[in-house]
Image (cartoon, rainbow, N blue to C red; front, side):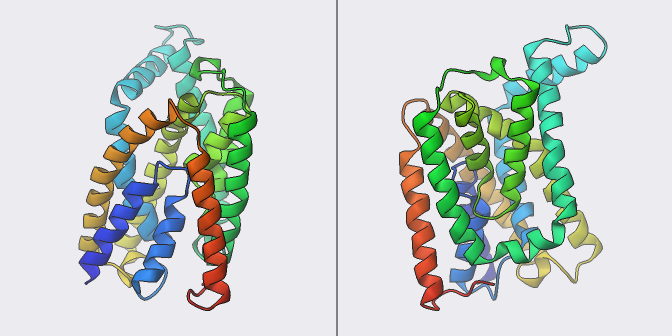
Length: 280
């Protein structure tokens, strides 16, 4: 039964990671509904995100290859320091600092208090409203070549909000991008690129901890084999979703995701008030 639950959670991770609806919140909620014994855990969530992040690397491989090569060449002045791809490389590094620092400072709260379903219900509603406002008022004229240091800083701090389940990494950064006037596709593309260092770093850090201290983290709910299966499933499903999502937002608004966030947030409140779900 644990393998089936792990596969389901892998599907959930793959389906929700790239949508602005919070994959960590969905893994947390579905894990509770499946009766896995408790919250699947921050460690399990971080590790299976390696699967969806591998999907990002595969999908954006041409972009990543170009950005990394131009950034590296800029170090040796083989290309201008103001080369657009080289600058994006620097912006991704710079924008990853806030989530690393805040993640380390508030690690205990992230793994415990902030995983309360009450917190998730509140963030689903609040950040759903913010996404709707940003999508409505945003100018949607800027592209990735218009990125600046101040904008990269805002993107970085927006991403750090995703440490709170329910906020959504893509949701927070896309919302910030829309408020700053970026096109929907540009905001989403940079959101996914910016997430690579943070998600990979967090996933391998949690993997290291579970190997070093096997009595804690993942093994409490799922063993290494189940976690590996969930990660592979998340990769396959995530790759399909990212293709569909990028095609979708180039033509349509985020309104369906706003409505979904609000509906899920309200449903969570009702389920918590009636005792169907436990907050912690």
